[in-house]
Image 1 (cartoon, rainbow over the protein chains, first blue to last red):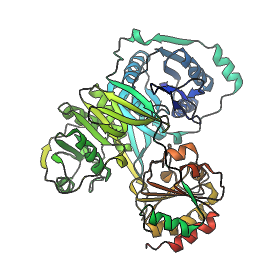
Image 2: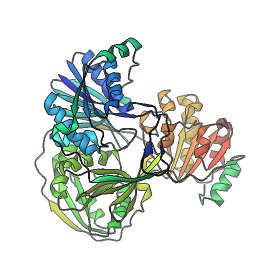
Image 3: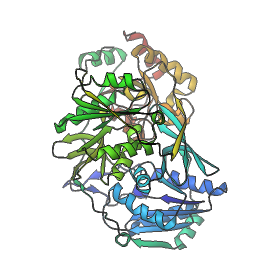
Image 4: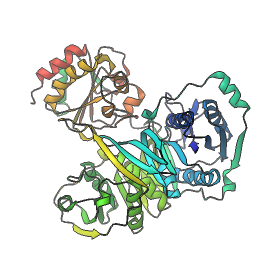
Length: 250
Length: 309
């Protein structure tokens, strides 16, 4: 079985990204970047499936500028076998990413496609479902457990107020929740070795996909500030303030 | 068109907010209800304000709705609509992106504000940035942040249109569901949420300290990721980017430090109260009312003093 894992390069989860002063875009100057955390879970799951003998090959793919080589190398260091960079300097919406990934799927013919359930930057959580739609194949989103038996995929997935279990056919697009696994730490020698591996680069423009978007970001700004809170001295004062100021009668 | 979610008996409350959001376009509104044996539910739904038509798909294979079958139905009938909208929940997040791809249009997730000219505000970068977007797509597909939109009432009279469901695609099948059993309101739409952090020290204390207050306030209980990881609380009640995102009237954070990922899950609450013995805890920056105190004394005192039963 072959697995394709999509890897997005995003800001570090500890970093507070701010808008540029002219509001045209976010200020990513000098911001620490890395693999989207949910994509790390996707990579980890692919590697575990290979370790269990279920999968035979893992292909990692990232879409973006040449800077994305670093997240692909991170994937290679974790245990991805082959890396593909779909190179473009354009800012892409999830639909365009899904269309490009579809082309990669048609070329690589994986049985299982793993993505993170959302990316920390855009927080849209659309790409996996869109890709499954474009491929007309099964989908298993927000997965916290994945098992493969007799060409069927058993998935535990998050729903409102609990979890549900579904079984899908192959090929399937799966999106990973943080609960799926605990991604391994990359050892330095592995990272050094990953630096030497080659990355297959495909120009996005050569894939014959319309990646223009009718959805555009006009401006960005800081969210309206939360009004400053006050400290109360005890529970009595707290309840009184909630009642008098907020109209919460408890 | 609005995609309704329900448990077979009752619509999810957030559907009413989604209808409130759809009113902004000023056009006619249809509510799509898909399920099995949903006559009673559809009858109730026909009384919702502002809804012109209920489009009903009732078939045995639609009881536990799979994304593949749902998207198949919605993308088919959706071509005749200008807007396809749903509350931003795990249910719609699973289905609508697939619908958008089948319709070959972009989608806008978790919209905070809708302006009339297909311009939207949504939050990105873990809530640190608000982006204004404009969509020139022929069909606007979006999910809305329910708490930012006013819920509609029940004084309407919608027409019910029975539609024939397409055959199942059989790409997936449903096995089982596990909902958290609780006498308390569900976390996602509780009016009051009490969350506990790792400072509670054990699963036993987590329950002993929080339950009496939650009982009195008819509140849902939540937990931080740290408390879940420490085994004090089940994962289903985790509040945060990796758990449930809540926006109650009153959020009470008890022994919560205020990690980024937790803040993400509760920052839209109307009033936030934090009780923590560390005066420098980050949570106080996000609290309207902070009390620096030993939670093991303050919380039982609060449970005694609140009058609601």
